Length: 235
Image (tube, rainbow, N blue to C red; front, side):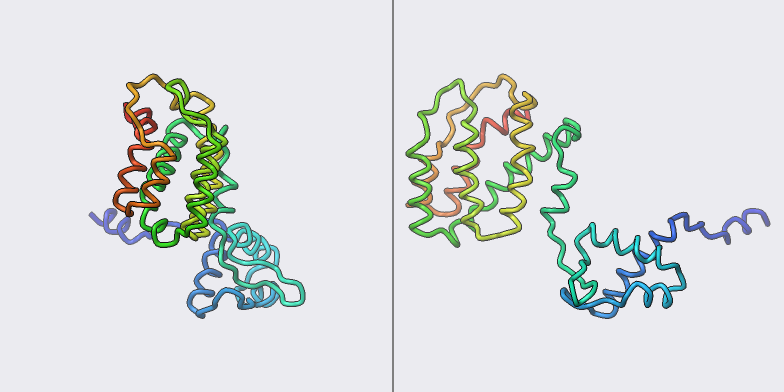
């Protein structure tokens, strides 16, 4: 009984490295002090003295934060807080040939979901010039055939323009990350399996919805446009 009481009083040992702990503490300090993007943080020597660790530990911790896009070195100013570029961070690990099949399928599915879900944003921002550009894209596309999933060049042009119309820079950057994975999943045959193809809504029909319809109709049209891709994922 006494032995059990003793065990209950023993706390878990912190097995994280000193650099890990300093990294987390620095983040807590920045947050608690209410620092904003562009604010300068103390110099390495000052941080080392205040935290009671070596300058090497501080430098390695800051290097990690820099890799995460949370701090950066500015000439004549020092180290400042920065707003991380999520696209750049993701891009470093988004290497199709080292991702497993399940992850590739999940990323493929994310892109399909995004393109259905951005209908409201598209209708909020689309202009006549945007529609004219989309019409130029679809007018240059070859006639579709039953033997082709899609022409990758025109797919990129058309869908890339839709992301651009949202005026959402984070979404546009995210699309540039998803495209290589999307292309790899297609080229590798990962999702290129026989299915009973259903009639899908073409790019030209989507443009007509953008001209004369609404966000709800566009969501429905985009879902039907991507129907065969969903079938390849789920069947």
